[in-house]
Length: 108
Image (cartoon, rainbow, N blue to C red; front, side, top):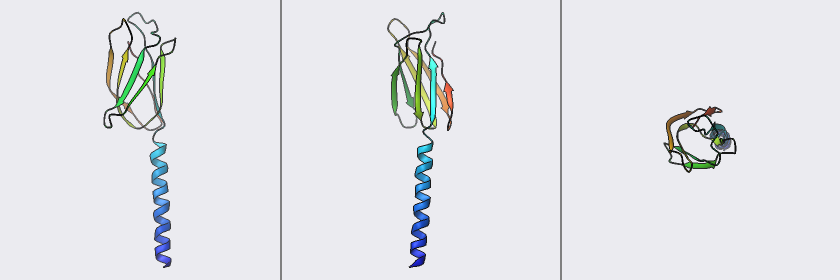
């Protein structure tokens, strides 16, 4: 009986550690600025990122200074797309995000 209790305790500790580790991996950020060909900021551009392995997509809008941020991302490879009226759509593939990383992805 004591062995079963010890085994179950060890199993619970292992599972809790695994769950904590999995949650800790979603602590990365992709950030950047949308600018036109002259370097001027593009406000209100729609920016979306897609994690290539899961297909999960997040969308945001650039600020008045063209800045955007996607916090709380997991480790993986992402594709970024930026669109704004009157501008050509910008696509960037292969953005690699590691654990606890901040990756800058500029859109021109």
